[in-house]
Amino acid sequence: MSIVNTVCRLAARPIGMPKPSNFEIIDEPAGNPAEGEFLVRVEYLSVDPAMRTWMNAGRSYVPPVEIGEVMRAGGIGRVIDSRHPDFAAGDEVYGMFGVQRYAVSNGSGVTAVDTTVAPAPVHLGALGISGLTAYFGLLDVGRPRPGQTVVVSGAAGSVGSIAGQIARINGCRAIGIAGGEDKCRWLVDELGFDAAIDYQAGDLRAQLKAHAPNGIDVFFDNVGGTVLEAALSRLARGARVVICGAISQYNAAGELRGPANYMQLLVARASMTGFVVFDYADRYAEAVAQLANWLRSGELRSREQVVHGDVAEFPEVLLALFRGDSTGKLVLALDAR
Ligand SMILES: NC(=O)c1ccc[n+]([C@@H]2O[C@H](COP(=O)([O-])OP(=O)(O)OC[C@H]3O[C@@H](n4cnc5c(N)ncnc54)[C@H](OP(=O)(O)O)[C@@H]3O)[C@@H](O)[C@H]2O)c1
Image (cartoon, rainbow, N blue to C red; front, side):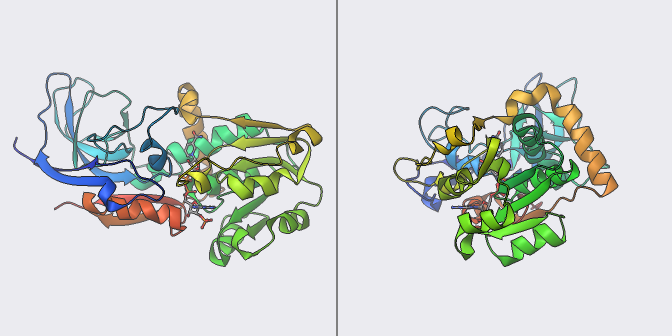
């Protein structure tokens, strides 16, 4: 088979916000699968804040994307040619296929996607890594109890919107922090959050005090920086702070800004714990089954923002995450050419 692949490779490490010149978009022949491999036509790409951190050199929970490598990305696509015993042409699959139209895979980390349960983009959001991150981060790390107050930052994002709803489903008071009135209205009116705070509107500490007068029992943090500091100043005794991410810091050109008031953990006898969803891989099936049940019953709602385009659009679509232009799960759909 002679197929032209369009590939996005990392051309240079960004300083601050990524620029189109950090990437190189190239047409090249798609590889042919060898024995034990298969070829996937990538249909949907997951666009994630973590991509920005993968572009940096240095120690992290996964190795950096090297200069010249295909930009790392999770994606969903269809197997179009297979020499692998477990994958057949026509299968819909999820894997780390990278920002490209075609990927050759040996099946490592690749799972079947059942689009009869939900459309493919949902398998990148509520039924994918976002949903799993919200599920394990909130329930295992945050350990909320019914009646407790759970505050989620980045609440209108992919992970945050699910985390807040899981808190509500578990009988907690769910308060979201998000940017702008529209997002806050969506959280309360559509997703059933008990309250939402627009962090762009002014004094976040005062708003947290007003909405959580008895303090925060679980703070699920996707944002870091000043939002984390504000939440630390309002912790209830014995609170759990879940460090899921710190999107406000991912484009910092210098040192990250850590919480200056971390001694509030001592005052509140609180804990602050980071986690990586991949460590829960042996329990993914349990979580996906539960998330799918909640979606089916209508207790959980998912929202995907699907942008249609080509591989060349990826650098611009990635920026939407950092501009706050996305609500729910951001997906780049690679339409057939
Ligand atoms: N620990 C893990 O295993 C794991 C796994 C997956 C994801 N994560 C992390 O989880 C977090 C959420 O991921 P996601 O995929 O759901 O992304 P997301 O929340 O959908 O990310 C986009 C949103 O982040 C907000 N944002 C961007 N820049 C901001 C800033 N400077 N200050 C405050 N908010 C800002 C914007 O919302 P507003 O309009 O509300 O500002 C934007 O719409 C990220 O930090 C990610 O790295 C962790």
